[in-house]
Amino acid sequence: DEVRDIAQKIITPCSRDDEVCQRQKLLDFVTAIPYKTNPILAKKPLQVIGQNYGDCDDKSNLYGSLLASLGYRYYFAFVPKHVFVLVALNSPLKQGKHVTLNGINYYYAETTADGFQLGDDNRYRLSDFRMIYDPVHNRVIQKRDDL
Image 1: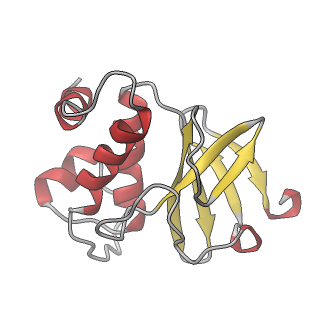
Image 2: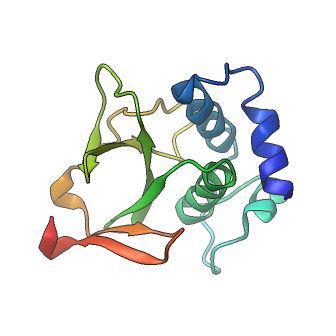
Image 3: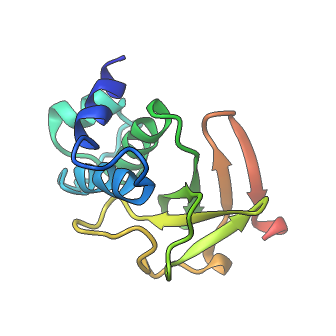
C-alpha cells in the first residue's frame, strides 16, 4: 500500500514506542502541504501529495489515511465550514485540547495550519462541533444533539 509506505518513511525518525512523535511527524508532513480551497469534491490522499495542495477536507483525509495505514485511531470533527482531525493518544499529553470518547483522549490535529502541534488550540470549542465522524467504520460517533 503506497500510503502506508509513505507513512512509514515519515515516522522513521521516531522511536517505535513514541506515539506522539509518530503522529506529529505525520501531521507535520500534511501541514507542510499548502492550503488551497478546492470547490470540487475531495481529492484522494495521493492526489493531495502529487498536486501539493489541498483544502481542509483534502488534508484531513490525507492525514487520516496516513494514520489509518499504520493502525492509529482518529475521527473527523466537523464544525461550520471546516473539518479537522481528532487523533487518539494512549499516553495523554501534559496539556492540549482534546475530546474524551469512550475513555480515550482524541487530540486536536489541525491539518490546515503549518506547524500545528497536536493538542494546540485551533479556536474551535466543543460547542462549535456539529458532528464527530469515524471514517474507518463509516459511522457518526456524535451529532450536535449529543454534544
